[in-house]
Amino acid sequence: MPSSKEILPILVAGAGSGIGKSVLENLNAIGQNAIGISRTGIERESKSPFEFGKNYHCNLSRISEVPEFVSSLQKQFPILSGVYFTFGNGLFKPVEQITLEEWNAHFVLNLNSLFVLTKEILPLLKPGAFLCYLSSTAGYQGFPESTAYCASRHAIAGFAKALREELKPKGIRVITVYPGAVYTDIWKGREGFDQDDMIPVDDFGKWLATLSTLPDAVYPDEIRLLPRKGIL
Image (cartoon, rainbow, N blue to C red; front, side, top):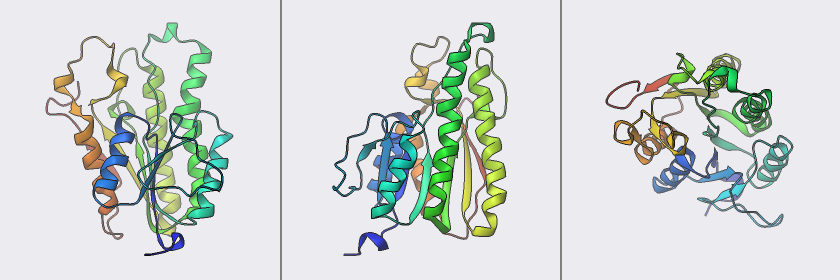
């Protein structure tokens, strides 16, 4: 059996529910060694090893927890083969109804935490590794009552485009996925949308997990994936 230093696991950030939960499950179903993190994850004893397939606690909206988690992960796994950034929330209101506190909290999770996790995780990546960021159709066009969400998803796309150019010389791949409507909790309570028109979350998670199996020489950059009816 290979030692921890020879195993190159995949980290799924935002594995507590929705797309991230499905990605973690599907990665392990296809034989990839994956570990999840989310605010709802299990607490880990400091001396206990990480176990594949489990979702561990790290509240990504609390920036101070991110370096602490990465440091503890690095002690067991000095190198990762990839990271999925699947976390984030929605804020859907007319712009005049959004408070500055709501706006700031939205960007802390959707963008600031993504930046900090990326920065902390880069020393664990070697040539052939990948970073997969989830943007959205809201990352390349606008929707009403979605100013905050569109702004954060556009920002993620711009961040990933620039990072891709920075990391090309290091052989680290940066993939941006722009999913259309995938049915998760973010849609619950929103009028005018039919669950049957959306991509089932496990179908999307199953597809997303396959990106981890691409040969090292394949460098997908931006992928748009829509439900059958297109942009809803």
